[in-house]
Length: 199
Image 1 (tube, helix red, strand yellow):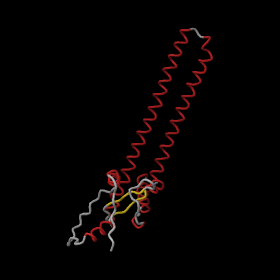
Image 2 (cartoon, helix red, strand yellow):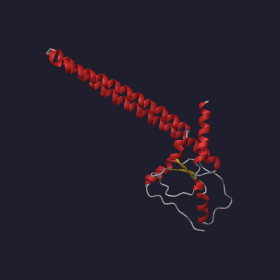
Image 3 (cartoon, one colour):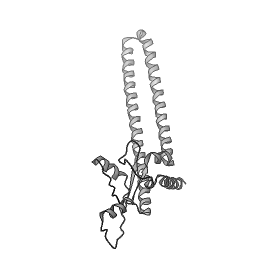
Image 4 (tube, helix red, strand yellow):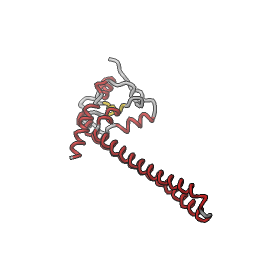
């Protein structure tokens, strides 16, 4: 029997694996310790499964609802900002048309007012962008917590020692047998839990 080993190339890879690993401990006592390192490797390999994060995100209803909500907020913020910018531009254009007919003191006060408005508009844009980013970060953290908590329970129930994540083009896993892919089962479980939470 050939012994297969998985070599991880960097600390970043290890950190990525640990971040998605279900933190469950199997505390079974074995009456006889494994005498061959080969049999220990096979046993622990059978306790490791993976989830395709691309499929998970496209089929997990909570993520779809979250994406719809955040996209709607982003679109609303962009529309609001565009409306404010257009109003400001109209005001500037109107001033430029009347500029030559206005007395010097009125020109100066109008220019000061327009400069203040421009600064307020820039601050509004930055604050709105920061608020959206903060909300997105907070929602992503909730999403991660939901998935990690479910996987912890799932892995414990199935006796798995580790749940890895796989994402095409951005993965530490170069090859894994498809029999270790539990994505479909996890998606069904997550969607069922989400449906119960919504009620």
